[in-house]
Image 1 (cartoon, rainbow, N blue to C red):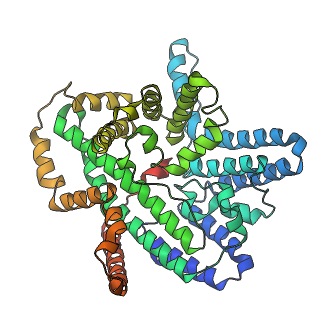
Image 2: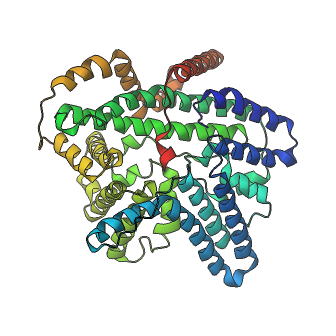
Image 3: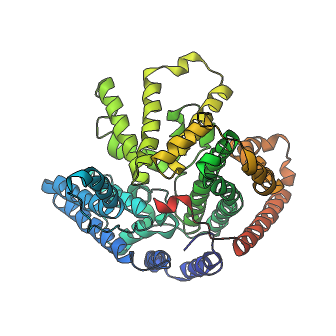
Length: 476
């Protein structure tokens, strides 16, 4: 089930909210857990059992780690290996078998009987949730959850189940026990949800329409302008798409009394790669920092180990996104520039902020090429096109872009996106007290309400008339 679907907006969400309001507090976690399982199973029940088994594994090993402290490390290792084993089989076994068969082809040692495994939706996210729980219990940061339904709710809570954010168990452990249902939370959550919905169905989908059209052009027919436009559109598509899902997840959680941490903070305003990773997919970067980088030694064991740890973390970050050499290249790209920033003290050069941000935006655009490209060959050819090493006339496709893709609606969405992505709304919000009187507060609230209703209505029209458009991070 998609957040941007008629079934979710007009059936599932209102029914779940109404039931949550009516149910006694003692049963609300049970209700949300059942609703979340139903949400997951809506698109097919094939892998619902896998999700339940994964939760049961975490439940059992969490109890063992807490009740048997002498062998706590053993239970942690077994629990983490069980989580990683499930993830490896469903997400990475095909990648390794394919590459093994390529290497073994000449020797006749291929394994032809192996069948590709369908990737369960959201498996990377709920696996990391499970490992977070295991590690937090072992570290005594949180107590093991004795109520299976409460742990099931943590693992399967529908706002973050499919595409995050990655919520640490210790972040919401107390919220699972006690939280209030407040209409003010419902109002604030609904506002955040509508903003996210608009970012998805109006902004992200507009960029997706252009980006998908350009990325499917035969590479030999693509010119420099087309190549750069394809990368530029995808740069905004992935940000609007993923941050929209995070906005909606945070808003939905708020409606039910949960406080989720922010997952994005204007990443395209970053002045360095280190700065970028404090702004982009914050829940993932902090997860790897706390559960991998620091345990590996972090910054404590000398320059050599720092660089090694960085490369391990970002290769894992790339591989977490998908079983493909392209994602490893994407991770290596970020690992390289993060290492370079540690070697060269760029901050001492006193580069003006606007220039450093422009340089970073250019580099981030380059980093998205392997993330979007089909394979290594496609990645290399796109880079060649972008830098003129494989020139081709714009020809027919230039006219196609001008007449079909680059419409007035696209340029309007582009201006709105540039304004929002580079902090325009935040800038105005922080300074609204300079030009608004307190007496106008109620009028402003009415205007905001009317705007939200209008935006929701517009989103509904887009959803009803538009085509199926899943979130990018569903496949991770």
